[in-house]
Length: 318
Image (tube, rainbow, N blue to C red; front, side, top):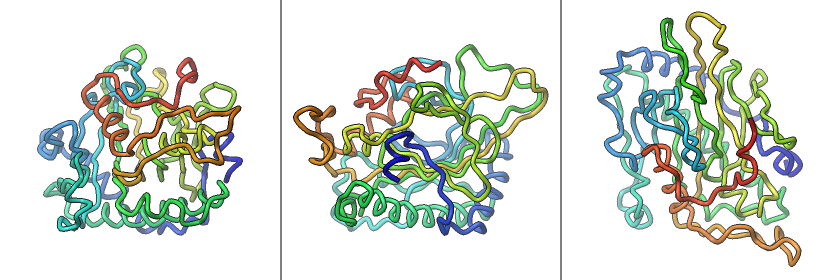
């Protein structure tokens, strides 16, 4: 784990225990929802950029803005949820200054959409918690190091549909299905269709295609883990490119991204084992929620994010 996180920061895991039946139900529910007319889906859109819930239509976000890079809006549509069973009496949740624990926005149709996504969210939460224990061990920390930093994590799951329909106009210059970005929190648990499109920047500084192996889930590290480890571990720059222009007809790709971001009030600062006199901390301490909100608002307002970037020096990859 340490070697994979040092060298790449993007890995595949098997033996993860994620039920295939849960994944199948999620994909079936996604297919039904994203097939609905745009006007129907738009009725369940987020009410404002700081509410990370509900439907997002194509060309309403630009992930590259999270790195301060201006490109045409992205060619994906998504539906976002958070925890579905929130204890509003919990003083920690009640004190949240950023509204991270706002209620989910659920569509009236399809009928199985809510239960399918909630089951997926719960299974991904369990896996992410297991992963943080493995991360701690790989970093020579106590196995429970992250426990009190994720016990009220600002967690979001996005079901994402990339679909070029027959007759769709070609992408604009530099337009991506999803623009280049790093993820924002601790780690992401990602299911992706075995369809080309996802690319990551490797240790050589070049873009590399990633197509998951059968039965594997993709795990990638986020900014906060890179900041905790002083870049010993990489928050991997990645994007989703459009299908080749010479390919005729429709082209579709689905993914389900579960973002495990840590507690909004967790203070992220360099681990003592990851810095020295010759390798001082590269990032100032930051509250996880402040970093997350600054990252979210850039893509949703199509303006440069004010959050610290962990991708400096890697934006030149062509």
